Structure formats: structure tokens, C-alpha cells
Length: 360
Image (cartoon, rainbow, N blue to C red; front, side):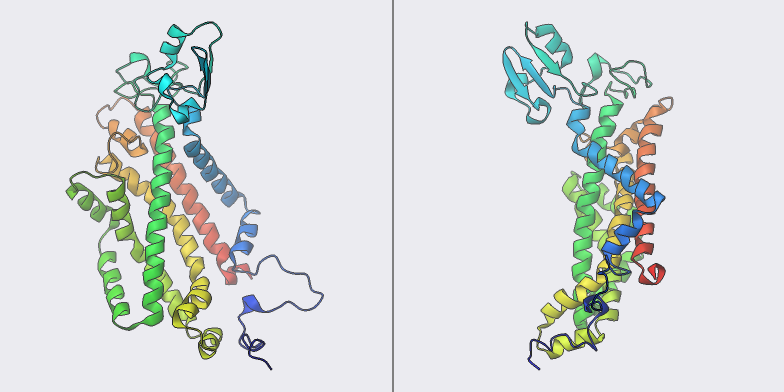
């Protein structure tokens, strides 16, 4: 038997690499695989509804300029045509909002405006007070104490919440997966050090540490917020990955790969790390809602993103100074609740679908 034919002997080949019997239909993913889990989730109403809600929030974040902007989507102004002016911000339309456009328009000029023709930092038609919803069609969700449109603030706050959540989850999942995999596979002093750091950081509540660190930063911003979240949340992923690596490393196919001369890094990357992706995927989905809640809490306490960045937490914070402005509390609070509950329900369903014992 040649060396190429003996790379994966049938007796030690992992179940995911065994060929199906001749003539048998090829299965669409084995139980416990990500493909099998996604197919099973499509048949369940609650996870599908949660995924739809998150997709809608993502579309709102992506197309925020088409929903609320002080510049038109497309227009002809003073004989010049501008397309996607709310995204490109042409110099010819600097300072041109809807009232000024109507006042200076010439024959033949036209404009297609967003759903709300007001930006997140712009006072709507000179208003400087909080107005409840449905006072006017130009501000369907009312305005805050500075006269800024709440709908525009919430739309751009969706982009801030999901953007911070995605970047933070990517950062702490990558950091935790790498440190946990290396520590569990190679062991030794590095494993001892990583384990002690995990135990130390896990003893403190993440919101409290994040609040303290952000309060000590002279000028807190996006980078400091991402660094704080990634530096505090990577321990959760590292603990899961380290435990999975310790469970997978003694298996027969990993021993066979080592016996065939594969380098330790190749064994870790090709044979061990792919078997640990199930808890990582679940932790990433659950982490989205947790980061949204943490970011909103820090913004509510005014130690998160700068005040110039529209966020759900910043709108919630304004309700503290205006007790009668219930819409400043209810509307962003409902969005935070929907985002957190949808990601938690989706993560729980994904964890159950990725469990091969539950799928069997």
C-alpha cells in the first residue's frame, strides 16, 4: 500500500471523512455540522423569525442614508444632476437641505428625498425642543431636547450598535480562539499562564471593568471601546476552545496525523481547530446581543462612544434629563430588547442544532 493511500486508514478516519456506501444518497451535512444546523433552523419558526429581525436591522444599518439624511438621494439642482448625494456628499450641495432646496430651486430642478429628510445631528426645521411622535410627518418618531429627529438617531444608532458588535465579536473571538487553541494543544508554561489569566479576568464582571476602564480613558472612542471589550471577553472563547482542543487532541486521527510526520502547527490548524468551531460559532452569535447591551449601557452612562456618534444608549441617556419624554426611553429601549432577544434566541437554537446528540 502506498504512503498516499494510507494517509487516512479506514479504522481511524474521522466520521466526517468516511465515504458513504456505494449507491447511497449523499447526505446534506452530518448531524452536528454547521450545514446540517442551518438546514434544521430554517424549519423552525422562532429562529427563522429572529434571523429575519437581525437581517432587517442589518439592512437598516447598511441603508441608513436612504432612510434619513439631510441630502437628497438623487436630485437636479441648478442644472446639475447628483446621484446618491446623501452618500457621496458633493461639494455643490454643501449645506443644502430640504427647506433651502425648495427656496433656491429653479425651473426643472427636482429631488428624491429619503424617508425623513433630516440627519442625525441636524435640528429639524430649527426646532430646539423635545416633541412627541406624530407631531408632524417630517418627524414621525418625534424629536429630542435639541430638536434632532429621533427616527434618524435610531437609524444611525442601529449602524453604531451592529458595527461595534460585529467588530468587537470578531476581535475577541479571534483572540480567544488563537490563545485557547495554542494553550490547549501545546500545554506547558503558556497553558498555565493563559489558564490563570482566564481565571483572574472571569472573577470580575465585564460591565464593571469596562465602565472603569472607559472612565479612566481621557478621550474614549471606538478604538478604546473595542479594545476594552476584546480584552475582557476573549476569556470566554478561550476557555471553550481550550477545553475542546484538550478533548480532540488524544483522538486516533490526530495521533495518525502526527505519526505520518505532520508538523504540530499543521495538526492544530488542519485536524484539531476545525473540530472546535461549534462552540466558537455559538459564542459569536450570543456575543452579538451581549455586546449590543454592553455598548448601550456604556453609552447610557456617557462613557462609551463620543457624543457626536448617534447611538441607542445616548438616546436613552437623554431620557434621564427629560422625564416626560417617554419616547426617548421606549423606542431605543425596544430596539435594544429586540436585538438582544433575537440574538440570544438564535444562538440558543444554533447551539441545540449543532449538538450531534440532540440532532440524532
